[in-house]
Length: 159
Image 1 (cartoon, rainbow, N blue to C red):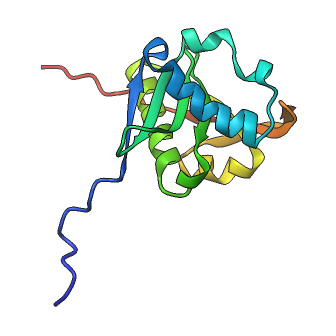
Image 2: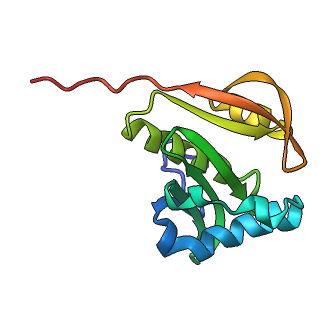
């Protein structure tokens, strides 16, 4: 019997949704602590800043509700603090987080979003339409490159 290619694909075993920083702070911080501070050795004092209070945040959770990824969008259109738990990388979590952040930017009327990509992730962001701008630079001891994505204006609905 052949495979039914018209059958709906099962939903991914994770969920990505916008969250409030104050309500979800512990889960967001847990992912960022594991990825940036523990794994990538970013100094803790560089990881935490006052932008978290003003930013939009998205949280990826597994089927049990445990945090597995996060990212934030600052009001000026800067995407940052994208992190995915090591065991969840390569499974679409980062792409879903990025898509959620870009969608939030569009809903806020932003026409351009920017991010500072670690150089090993340049290809990932390029696959999602981001273009590298400028040269490489160091941030928290890690080589980065600025990237940007121009958003299409949403069409006006006129009756």
